[in-house]
Image (cartoon, rainbow, N blue to C red; front, side, top):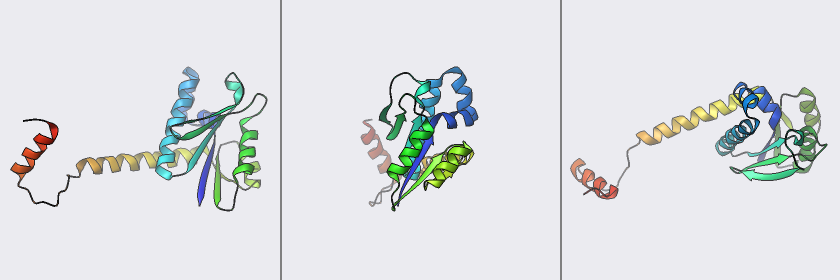
Length: 170
């Protein structure tokens, strides 16, 4: 089954303390950090992630692009993120696709639930993301500790010589 996570960008930024604080200093950096975190989440879960931002916070007309393999959508002028998310739920909903909408906007949760999507609050999403980050960190540490294995039994002295050759040390 395909899983898609639609993220109400500014709603999540306003709900997560780290991003909310950053937004007050630099909105663009808060957006970038959210996108980076969603890229990690996407890589860990395998979900397709689409982050939707309201156009009223940035100049220009609606646009869509891909960053870190995450789809980023800026709505058109006079279109809210909620409206775009509702359209995306209708466009993307299929029998083999499960859609989650990440927002803490209760009305938006209700509307998208009525259209067939499941809700994920900002709090639930940050808890899942923290778990994913801890798991990634744990796997990286485990990989660092793992010694390279070889099928040829070598004495430690010979293995050290080969390692120096591999590094280019003589």
